[in-house]
Amino acid sequence: MTEFILNTIFWTLAIYGLLEIIKNIIYIGTYTKFKSNGIYIIIAVKNQEEKIEGFLRSIIFKILYGREEYLKNIIVADLQSTDNTKEIAKRLAKEYDVLKVINWKDCKEVIDNVNEN
Image 1: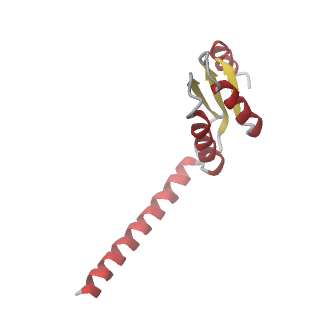
Image 2: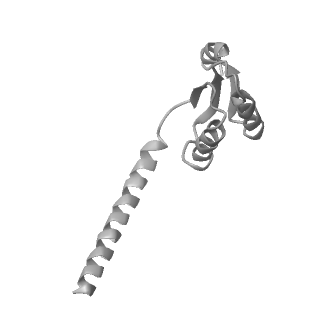
């Protein structure tokens, strides 16, 4: 009886894994056909010095090591923070080329210039 239960669990997981592989193959095929000049992420932040580094690093990790090959920039728009949020974001921008830190007033200008790049 125990052997039957273990075999049932094994084959259920094996079939599930096979279905996930097939799903990912189909997803990759449709994903690579996406026509775009790039994906821009704009993140507005204010007074988040305790959370900003972990948040940005997790986003960058997902982008650099995931399937986001169309990503052009991550733009951090600072909403006049009174803590070290902007400095932390600028320090990370020195490490990663995809990360840009701007003031919230400059955000519209960046959006307007996306079509030109």
